[in-house]
Amino acid sequence: MQNSVADFRNALGDRALVNVPLAPRTTFRIGGPADFLAEAHAISQFIELVLVAHRFNVPVFILGNGSNLLVRDGGIAGLVIENHCDQFFLEVTKNGHAKLHVESGAALPNIANRMARQGWSGLEWGIGVPGTIGGAIVGNAGAHGSSIADNILTVSILDEKDSVRELPKNELGFDYRTSRFKQTKNEIVLSADFEIVRSDPQVCIARMNEYTEKRRSTQPTEASVGSMFKNPPNNFAGRLIEQAGLKGTRIGNIEVSQVHANFFVNRGGAAANDVMQLIDLVRARVREKFGIELELEIEIVGK
Image (cartoon, rainbow, N blue to C red; front, side, top):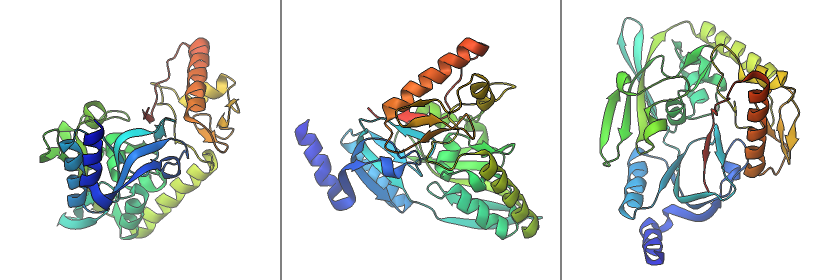
């Protein structure tokens, strides 16, 4: 085993760093180290890193912006690939419609902002969602009544056989905050095509400003993982947690936000184990008071 690790390290060469702390690379500022970490800035480089890992049977984890993610204190085994593939282009198709091709490492707020200012509508809701296009697709991210699934056309993936394939929307398994990629775990999102429509730039910008102001006034500014739990049918996780009297509840340096109860905030130097304990406490209290089982929206990874 030791020899295979050494061989893998040699195969990576100077493309990867060893034992890299992941906390600074997540929005929660929590998590242990990656065994190996490499950055990909082009799709060809991205695929090559995955293929090298597969050749040595080394597990691969793709890291985007590090939002919606809790890395355990033991870190992540194998190779973490930080996805910086962020190229995009626009192809005007017909009657005020266009196809937007975006690589999976592009930041959703940046794409939303750039399209809106050019007068292309469809992604304005993503202005405050702190993730990449790839992460948004995996979790079917959404806000303000819209989601990534609404105007997606196709997704290009690296499949479990290391082949690049294009999947149409009807094969993506989108549902509330989930997709086929949350279930399979062995397919990697490379890029996606979206349909967007021509609009007045000032209208798009005004809509983004409204969304930004709403988010600023209703969500905490401290380091967090985003919404911790999915909203149960016909209800809101934050409301249930608040009505259970849990706002401000703290374990270690993790606290249920006083601003929005479905956000846990890192008060500084928090441990993933504290987060796990607070998750269990909140779930138990809500279950006892309302008979509702809260389901996590975030992804928990690592050892």
